[in-house]
Length: 315
Length: 259
Ligand SMILES: Cc1cc2nc3c(=O)[nH]c(=O)nc-3n(C[C@H](O)[C@H](O)[C@H](O)COP(=O)(O)OP(=O)(O)OC[C@H]3O[C@@H](n4cnc5c(N)ncnc54)[C@H](O)[C@@H]3O)c2cc1C
Ligand SMILES: Nc1ncnc2c1ncn2[C@@H]1O[C@H](COP(=O)(O)O)[C@@H](O)[C@H]1O
Image 1 (cartoon, each protein chain N blue to C red):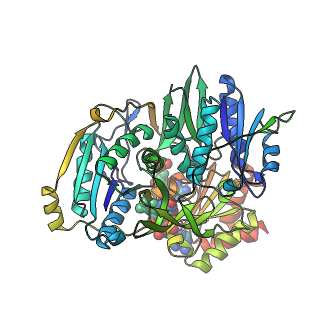
Image 2: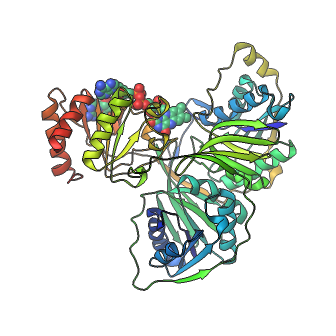
Image 3: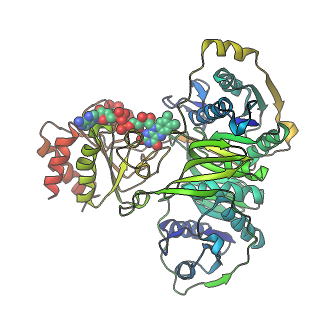
């Protein structure tokens, strides 16, 4: 049995859940796929998940209304143990990457982190992942009886619905008390397209000059293209943009169809968050900026003038 | 109070990596104390200096698990001001890709040293793993906070801010706990000459992996440098309008990534 943990928000299952189902189906020669839905008031989520897999396990509890690493780890490990699961698949989101290690330790199972490819054949789980700040692709494998893996967003195509909906089962869980108490929140910029799911990302760096420059150049172009907005750490540290827009090692990793880097130098830490994008455009006044080494199309020049021209040309 | 800061040794961010015989060859690379761990060590020193939790005798111990060369990173942390160091020499066993196994060693040392707080980098710049802190916390049965950008300690309670899926959160957390550090938490200090000299005399205890009953369950099969062919097509930028038109044409007609 392969267990997929369903991420959800705003009453819908996340794109990552559909991607995990595809990953699970491609590994599925070793057994059926089940999905686990954790949360409070999640009947609609469970029904949506049931369009994708044969079995949906539902833990609908008030304590699970908001995510907590210890609660999530306890729940997933318990289900994996009782269901004799051979492979647990968790999205490599920030939360997935922080509770999955606890699941693995509870199960004494190895953890394969951030899989971009995954196979499960003859009892061996093999994953392809990135290392050395995304400069290396490596293959790892394990023949342990139980394996936990986190799967990179965007690595698998979102799964489509099956013909007949799967069965739903309510599950009983023993949950620990929360120890991390949330005392305040600075939510990501609601209203804008989530970075990780966008097909087009327009990202800006210090080369945009100021918060106003960024707004006019980067956000202005993003609006014209229906794109998400990304930023470098330098821009976030300067307070020009919210942290949620940061792309890179300490921010979000994106893999859109099109990434436009505007006034970004291309530091290793930034590249590691975007160098898997399908097509990369760089606009920078410095012809030697490292961003050009990963660019498909480069324009050396002043980003303000060039983006203004782009905006007019798009109309 | 005792703080255990975990230290890894990784190639510098600007190092060119080399692959030989299907694996990354670090033989010729300049290796440094992982930047993310530096934030952890710095935070431990600041907690000591602030008399964290009302304790004026906070001890900062740095721990490395890996090949014997990791000693250099530990010496570096001692030069920054850590009180003493422990190196668990992994010898011929490659633990690098099995965080679950590594966490067993770290948790065991934390227990033996009677640590109250474990600090480590949010991500290791060699394995790109983000799992170490949480795995150690689970081994110890402790609470955790990951990707922390602000931290204080009052009595036996930590308070701080960290990154989550949807923005940032302020949190409270009881000790004992594991906290993973990242950029933004602090500005790490530089080692001073007197501290570098003092560091040579500080205790660095060597232990061997055999005493910890661990066997890695993940095997590294092969590694290759990522190389994605890029077009590297340069569009002259002197005429902004012409450049914009040509870029749009190329994105629509050649790359077919724009409607
Ligand atoms: C542990 C660690 C983690 C990090 N994580 C991240 C991360 O997640 N994400 C991240 O982005 N960074 C990260 N960094 C920081 C990273 O090293 C760089 O400092 C940062 O990416 C630089 O941002 P920038 O390109 O906006 O600024 P700069 O490096 O200052 O580059 C600005 C660029 O704009 C160009 N420019 C200036 N004026 C114009 C103009 N008028 N028109 C066109 N171009 C112009 C310049 O030529 C230059 O190339 C991290 C660093 C560390 C140590
Ligand atoms: N579009 C471009 N604009 C400016 N310089 C470029 C461009 N494309 C490639 N280069 C230069 O060529 C190098 C790319 O080499 P490589 O990484 O081997 O593909 C970079 O270091 C840049 O200096």
